[in-house]
Amino acid sequence: MTKPSLRPARPDFSSGPCAKRPGWTPEVLKDAAVGRSHRSKLGKKKIVEAVDRTRAILGIPADHRIAIVPASDTGAVEMALWSLLGARPVDMLTWESFGEGWVTDVVKQLKLKDTRTLKAPYGQIADLKAVDWAHDVVFTWNGTTSGVKVPNGDWIADDREGLAICDATSAVFAMDLPWAKLDVVTWSWQKVMGGEGAHGMLVLSPRAIQRLESYTPAWPMPKIFRLTSGGKFSEAIFKGDTINTPSLLCIEDAIDGLKWGEGVGSRA
Image 1 (cartoon, rainbow, N blue to C red):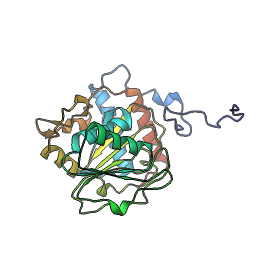
Image 2 (cartoon, rainbow, N blue to C red; image 1 turned 90 degrees about the vertical axis):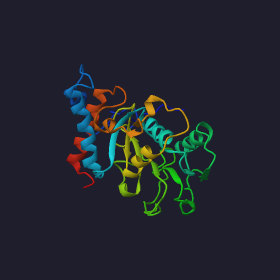
Image 3 (tube, one colour; image 1 turned 60 degrees about the vertical axis):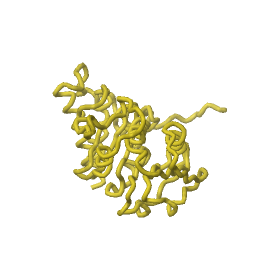
Image 4 (cartoon, rainbow, N blue to C red; image 1 turned 120 degrees about the vertical axis):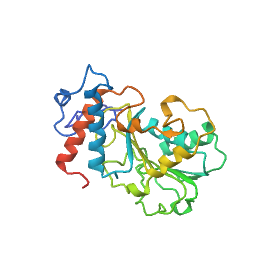
């Protein structure tokens, strides 16, 4: 292979690797709550600010809960799969490597028997008309490795009995999402907005919260995945009390990206 002779005009990249916002410099991190606990008043204020700005710029409904969770988009998806699946049959949609990974987790790790896999090769999409909305449905909105996305949300039934669980890490902030049709949405900061890695975002609809409080999975639940306590939804996780210790530098960078997005024009 020949070494490229042309360097990027804008060499600032996050760990995505996705480009940082235009004009980004490390100076934007000067107000980060470094040296402070994420449980401190200042640390928690920063976490809540990141969540609130996310809700506003994406137009996420007030009755949906938003949390910053561990382990990037992968961690957010795993939390949803381990916590919510098993109550109903599951339709797994896959047409690229990340969707294929979720199939592996559900079929080989959780070992759910009542599972259908609707698969399409790279460059194509699964048969959306074949989805049974009496089932829970797991899918990627935009395939990170293939670039193939669902056309819109029209194929998602308004009267669905199952949950619509959407890995949207390469779609959020780039594409409008029909929040009323999605029960679980996950993403990570390093995609689209050029944020830093290691943190995931998890959005739950009222229907997803109802599932958490009405269904207990048959398998042991690692602490890092637990969204309930004593059978009740852990509301505090969605009000700034993160499960583990987040990077307040990364949170400051996310806030900067959100402010930039507000400045150039949000979805609203």
